[in-house]
Image (cartoon, rainbow, N blue to C red; front, top):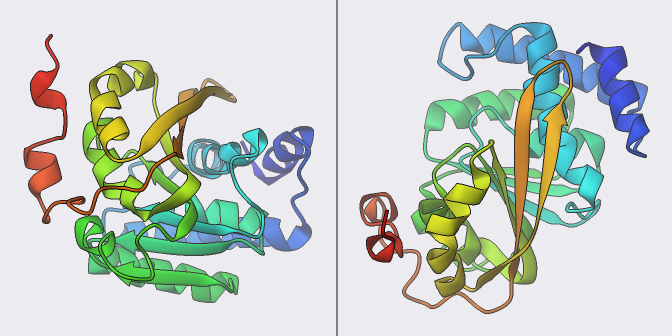
Length: 244
């Protein structure tokens, strides 16, 4: 996928990619390749693959009206900025907060935000477990996203505490999303979430299958969660009761 194909595919879904947005995507790609020589940001660096498997994949939640165009979005474990920064390029009035545990990635994202001229983006070097307990961030966001960060039982504890009541936790997953949710559904329920629906995207040019799990925050998250840093991954909620 190239710039023209990205523009066409997005416009087929009813959204516009302006010349400014296309220029921002091009600069983003160039920075990704440049910085990938210094640190491990992505195994995908071929231009057509980046446009398909990173940029198009990242904006796909917009096609299902999961993203409020001028609301608040928190991206947990964003890595190289996916999906939040492509969504920010698509929706300039979206306020984006990114939290990542690695300072080197935050430094890269600061450069991307500066070079692309993005306004309304906040970057935090922090563990999601700690971030989710902070006043001003806990239960503060319309949408919380995570893409390829951890399995659902772990991811729910990192993300749902940040979602405001009636807001949305959006997990971007691969082909085994349904299996993951079966194992993680007890954790989702305990943390105040309820699966609203699942949507599937087949990426162009044999890019593979993606699934979007949309989890509505129907109750406040109990104060005991998230647990201290590292615990969700070591002792995932609910998995001890799941039989194989």
